[in-house]
Length: 314
Image 1 (cartoon, one colour):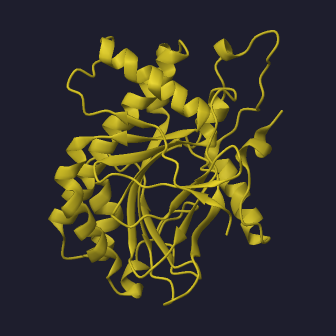
Image 2 (cartoon, helix red, strand yellow; image 1 turned 45 degrees about the horizontal axis):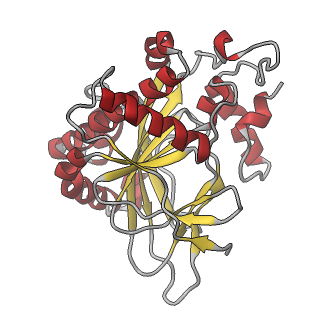
Image 3 (cartoon, one colour; image 1 turned 180 degrees about the horizontal axis):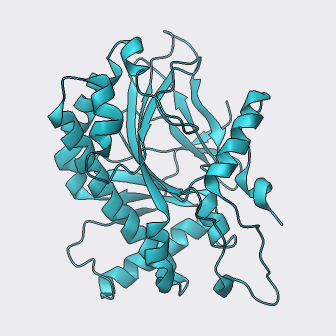
């Protein structure tokens, strides 16, 4: 394993009541967000309201992943990289729901597959988390766009985004074993990721010196990461963090996240405002679902990962 460091990522507080667009508090937090994303591509976002959901969220995830394997395999999708995945040699399982903020989608695309008799409390818990995370994601996105003078694109980006909910479990490594990769090192290919985890750490982010930062989050915080799609939409203005999950000890790691994905048929292309005489378009417009189709063929050939920026670089 590479060298680990306990250095803390920037911590930004989104729990302030005065956090309204145009207010001094908003402008102060907006500066912090821009600086954190330029330096690290990620930060820790404090949001006290998530504590109300913490216990029901992780009870729901335990109940879900404790279901028989054949039951979990009922969660399927015709789209690439959706539905149920796992278990693998990396002890990793996951499930996802597209457009999870739309009323009924969690129930129709996940709950009804796993509990045909119904499970209203499960659906409500995941929907409540999605709505809370979505509010935070839109706040951060608005701050980023404001900082670049691109406010006029806010509604367009929201309309072209698929807000995918993903639940993940990383099982226990073998007793007395060395730390094990739960998720290989990679860049997220989406627009933005908001992850919330239980008390078991494991997420590591590589800094500019090549060292792995062991991310230790507070119970009332998310890790926010910029994906390569947003990097490309901003014509390379922000960085996307290279990260992995390493499992250690005997505890099970659960996490739940909101992944903002470019919607299929909505081509990702940098605004002209980010192009000038010295810096032209650094990337070709691309369709995210077409990229996933290409990526799936690479995996079939044995590739572990593929770089979206390489896929559409000029």
